[in-house]
Image (cartoon, rainbow, N blue to C red; front, side, top):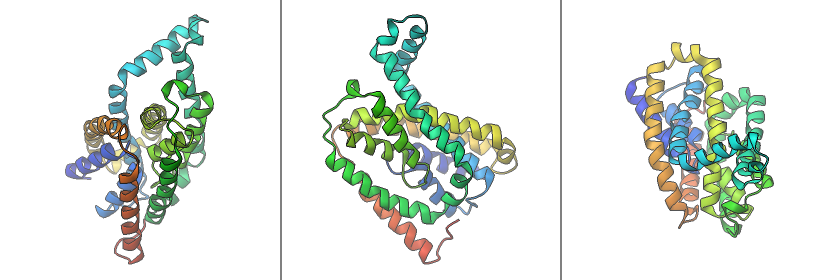
Length: 278
């Protein structure tokens, strides 16, 4: 991989990781257009590892909230009274909501990294899940706020996050849709989506580093991988800041229209033989 290709892919990852448009779907499309082999083990690991840049951007942007939650957990270890606080319970809610994607991700790791990387799946998922997002945005009452989020809510949203293991669905799109259906307001569910993404994506990154280090070294290369991760961080930070402001005053319509258009283009190109699906 050339450095300029790493910069582009890092930018795509950072821009799309937290927008409800599917970062993995976009990376799959761009990687294919660049001529890469989608089922290559090194490229698959590269795609997972550079997510760490966007995750770090979310961690820094939400650092005040995260420090408060971590502090509450540490205090709760020694203080029964602290365990009754909202921050302690909310931190545990996030951990519980992060478990499903870890279990499903490991159980179906091979299928996710091979079969589901087909552009047929990406195009279809982009279009079909847009219907789910449209419905969720339409029926969501937004009557509940961050302080109203329960353990049941985080587990439900965490289960929805598992659907995003299919490239083209979008992790943030799935979690935001689930939260809206539960009546949570857009800003609160977007922040919850960020919180749930941190352990999920960091776990995926660590797993790929541990299991695919040699594939990276002898394929894509660690230089381009680290460069793409840095670019992902810079662009991701701007995307997180923009998204929280956007959802405070707008629905998901613009993302839905974009997803449908992109999915249609992908399916037409693959169907016409202009690009191969894998």
